[in-house]
Length: 206
Length: 206
Image (cartoon, rainbow over all chains, first blue to last red; front, side, top):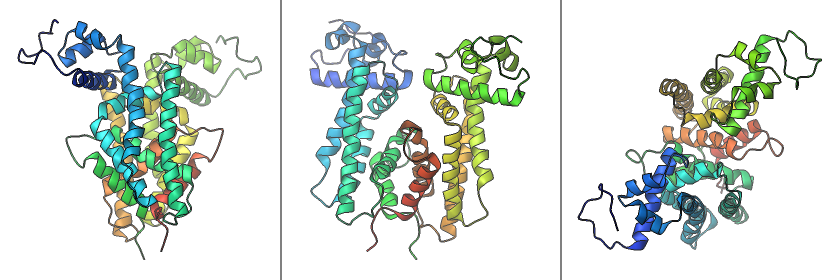
């Protein structure tokens, strides 16, 4: 298969297909997040991956298929990633882990996250938007359940559950707007610090 | 001056120019927020206002001038709106008012807020983006000052000031993503409820 000139000749000819897929999705995410869907072509994606367009088409039918994998995939995976990491522990501790696991996921898949957040409100594909919304609702439903359990266990005050869930999700969802990987705390630490503030409040004990 | 057919004949011929400007900016905001900059034409704005294109051009040279007024204006005005409403009171009370005043501003100018938030990261005009960033920094600087004062006065625990500012701003900035005016609490009440949670924490007193 032909290779783009930008690719070093030393690259092994037979790469792992799964690895290759991940690389394509990751580079495509970065391009979608930076230049938008319309501003990204199959040629751009191939170039960024250092592969030929024909090899790219070998893996994906078109740009839309890549975009769908990035945006729908990252919303669905976020839910599973967080859910799978909830410990057998008290409900408040599980709320904390929900937050730090989301921070980890954001750190790992930041470009897919940004591409997906942007697409969330602009995706012209109604069906895909609905499916993503469904996973988003699952994710939001999970934090509400955990909050309710913490209230029932007497660990939290009887706060407004949906609004508390929104406060927690706002802190995590807004992170991509200001976070810069080259400086300061890592996202899981930021999530943990938010958790401390939200759990214990700002007001000094008397 | 000619009027579009959609305008009822009963409208007073000599409207207040300032009122007219506000109406144009408000309708344009809604269109920019809904259809984006590229998806909005001078014709669309004139139609939405029920005025002729020539009357619209009487007030504004081009679409870019309207867009600049909406996006730069709303960031600058947010700062002034909030600053002007801070009471002579203890620092924690001033933090609370910062939050509820932002909620009021959001409620009043929601479309301009949304148009401006979207444009914040996509505005091709570098100079304008810089100026908006400057007002945004003023606004963020204000909440940090208030938090620092609350710590110095012993009202807040010695929390991380920039991160606490980000938590507060995240809660307010994310609101436009989920808030629907037709149901639930009004934005100033939401801001007040967030404030209560962030001040006092979720954890039940022992």
